Image: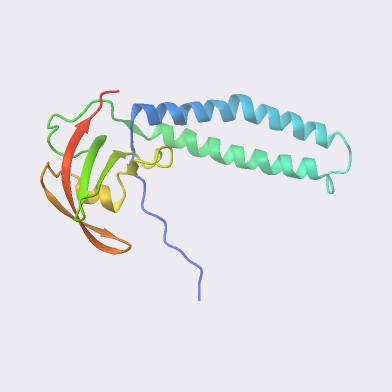
Length: 167
């Protein structure tokens, strides 16, 4: 039995201006602040002598690898990403950047904003454009009935409102 896992599908290369700024700030912080600090600590730990049993040195090198990995990822991602700063021409339909109010069959309302996959996790109401909910909602209008495949089964939701904020 093999442990092969097929590669995950590529992430959608869209992002909001705020999301782009956050990623750029993270890259600048890691490269200009965090990495020099850790490099200094590693060089100080290396100067203490035996590196094979020096926990500060080993941990510092591990931190540097993690920082370098994240810097490489952010550099490549920021080069290949498209910032969507303008709302779509037809604002009555759901597209990237839309803030949507939906209502489930029980009458409970929830508000989501469709953002790029690099932005989820920063705020609780953000959902990725790659998520099943967002995919089901794309190109729908107010009062449309949408069936969404969830881990618990198929849910039925109604689009109550659509809005776009200009950033």
